[in-house]
Structure formats: structure tokens, C-alpha cells
Length: 72
Image (cartoon, rainbow, N blue to C red; front, side, top):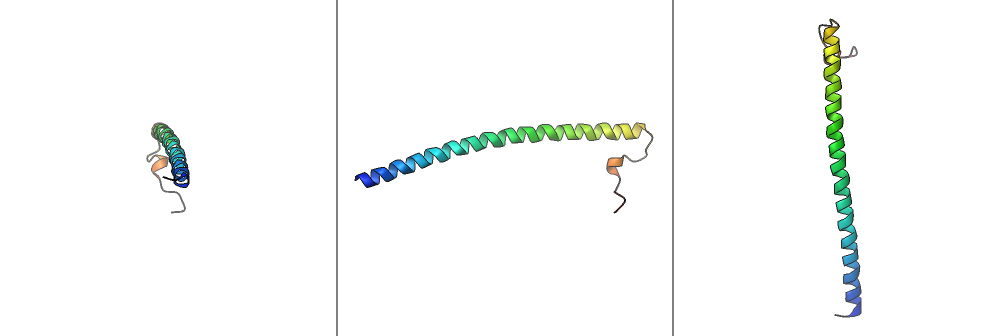
């Protein structure tokens, strides 16, 4: 194999290594974001339940979260 082919293969290997590292980094970011979204979703659900309970205890017949906005 001549030097031009060797240089090209070496360049392709470097690019592949870079892309592999980038893919792994992005995968880690996505995994962290997925965990954060799941945590935030649980918090929102807890807040909605707490507010519905508070509204029910206040004597409202339908929790505000279940009512349609006035413009509907």
C-alpha cells in the first residue's frame, strides 16, 4: 500500500475515533437528560396532586386543573 492510501486510512481512523467519542458523549448527555425529565415529571405530578387535594379540601367541586379555561 502506498503512503497516500496509508495517510487516508489513518485520517479515516482518526475521524472514526472522534465520531465514536462524540457519540458516547452525546449518549451520556441524553441519559442524564432522560433522568432529569423523569425526575421533573414526577415533581410536576406531585405538585398537581397536592394542588388538587388542596382545592378539594377548600370545598371546590371540580379541581381547577380539571376545569376548562373560560375562553373554551
